Image (cartoon, rainbow over the protein chains, first blue to last red):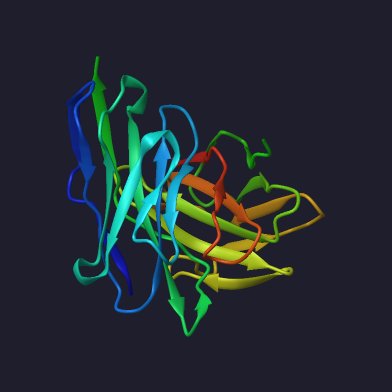
Length: 117
Length: 114
């Protein structure tokens, strides 16, 4: 079965610092990849997704992620974080079996980001 | 913007009791999901539902769980005889198409089993 690892449990940054959150997955086949964000008191929202094509994908609020197939990684980046980026970030994988998508998302454990003003 | 809603936001129940968690998916979505997150652990897939039947389920989704779409708007998760280890946040999600599409999540129901 596939699994997703997020290496950082809690990241603390000052405003304007650059962010990179790691995500690795274990699944040998084709996958769809997602980053979800959960702001305090709110529900999970999609930040960005990768299905195919350009491995560098851009999402909302200045976030981007790069898919590196050889490393089974999909790291999230932002060049300059803001206090409002304080949230929990979840990487998720959806494997494709025989060209058809599975229904389920497999999530990583999440990374809490705290941005200090 | 359309949202997935869930009720109640918090449910406290005694061990052995049955609970029903309710969800209203986004109206034009065809695929529905339940996930759960035990405190401090990962969000885990429970089940997906399409065309009035279960399309995929995880090992967690055993005989004590069931799902239903009783009418055109609600999607429910029933836990027949709750155990302490069922205490978790339960998230409902929906999507227009199957797995590869964005899944829209509800705010969750916190279930506490005492």
